[in-house]
Length: 213
Image (cartoon, rainbow, N blue to C red):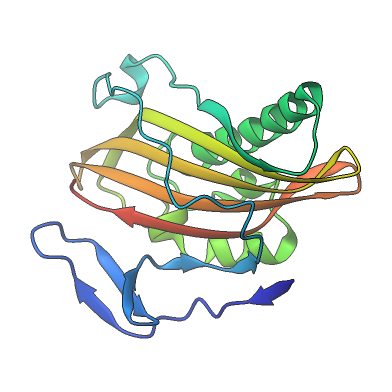
């Protein structure tokens, strides 16, 4: 079942002591980046992957790149270990490309379109409209560098007839920003993936960003 959730804000408040903008919707605090959602209760766990120990300096050019640590979570249906590994590798590559293209690299910059190459057209368009969460494109000219100190992924799968037909990637990314602003942010949430024409694509997401954690 596929349904569209309007990403437009319902109400805003400022998180005390943190300074992160949050969206109030359906009676609970929720983060602001939400687009297409696949209803796969068996595919999506409630817990987000825990971050790996963080390390590195605030200057991206002085730190070794941090790769995404990935693992298989819940699997609904029968799926061989080989096919689980295949989907995990594809999802990890997608998340790594998003992280590298949206949050780090040559900063400041406003064009992060390439970071969403593995998103469907609609999901990519919505992500580009939410730069304060889905990238660092809204951080301004004062941002000098961003260093990823931890990036983790837990992948839940739905399988049918021995093949994966859907996946939920539960991600948590910790980054240190230098310049203006200067702080540590955490981006966490879910990316919803489906195989399209032989390639896995992100068709929806539910992601939040906490600033100054």
